[in-house]
Image 1: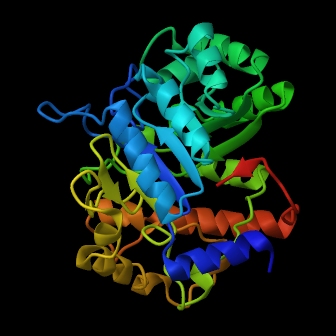
Image 2: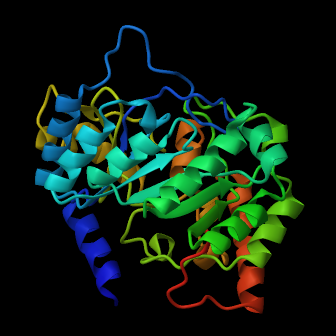
Length: 347
């Protein structure tokens, strides 16, 4: 077993939140068709100040956090983002920022670089027509591409990411080509999260099955450090075990895919929330496999996320697209085995 897999298993057993997703704001200049968020920053609720965000990072570091992803909304809208990044650097947390780069400029990117930010994960959905069909905002393609050049010149390590939707069937291939030309890494995801309120995305937003199969067949699937689905001794996923999430108001979640708050980190200490009865009941739920998944021959190829069914209030019936993608993955692997150490691909 490699060291990464061993650390993964140990941290799950000891429930150490090694990886944290920190939503710094729900505000965003875009209106992406596939976005799972159902609200902007709520009226009457105050986002964490920079000082409070830093305090949350200190709490998470003490609990064992090694890495953090700052996301949103659009985290670059926060003028205090450099201050938060600098705090993460001082805490020796490996961190990155998820962004569209639409609101970026040279001064901001340079300031973030000086604050210790090294990695950007940038959303790009295809060439201009497809990109702006997804963002629903004219001019965003030009801004993202322009700021990608600035970020590249400043020496950021960049990863381009795109979902596959019904609006950008050619998008993943354009994004991959752009990444390879510029020395960036790349990822495409054929699955779209349902909205946090449980509602499904409009049917036109979801990719057609023929496009999903094409993507899976053309791109090798990235290897996982440990296959949760192959053993009843492990949960269906690591949410609430060695991963955690925090929203813009300080609420602690097992994962952004599970809008199940354990409580607020500014009101109660981490340990009491992480070890609470609510948290323990949540974890027990992740050991219950859907009946449809028991003895499934596709389990070795499955990337099932129980969070999808949690938000839809239907944990007993996995989304059929997981099954279809697993079938496509098995077919793809029969043609082309996984490559060791592969960085680009899907999932």
